Length: 165
Image (cartoon, rainbow, N blue to C red; front, side, top):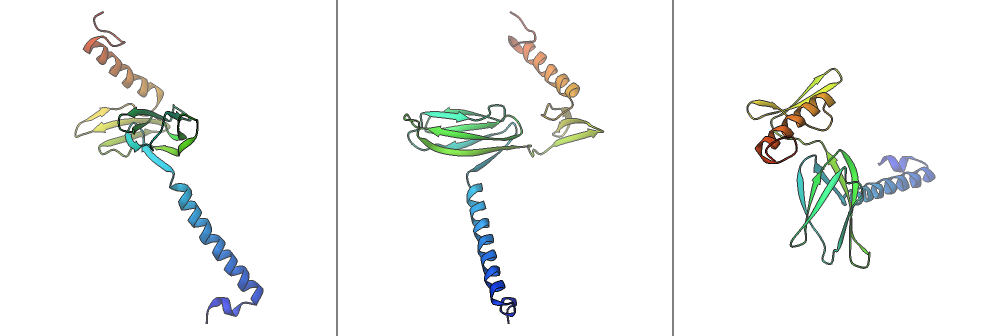
């Protein structure tokens, strides 16, 4: 004999209703997540656009960036942690695509994060370790690593930070 049959009739109906509402809630939650696109920080992903797209809008360009490629492909790059939206519009302004972009921390092989109290430093270890500038690193560490990279790029030829003019 089921547990429902032992309860008085009004409680049985309430139990059935709660079960149905929960099942519908889970179903709609899965549908809502279907329009999410997860991107890792500093990584790119491809998205095929529907036909007729003429305008691309990124809600917050500090979180994600997009570059339209031939053949209706969009390259989306994670720029900062968080979420933003992507809209693709046709010439009349009608929304053809509305996607939520979620940018998470990259799960790269060979990345070591050193936590020193409140300070964070990130290293790439493939197999030798070298400093790597990553969002969330301590400002002094981050600035030192990016400064060295800019100086090196400048010495390689014509970029800001040095080199012949």
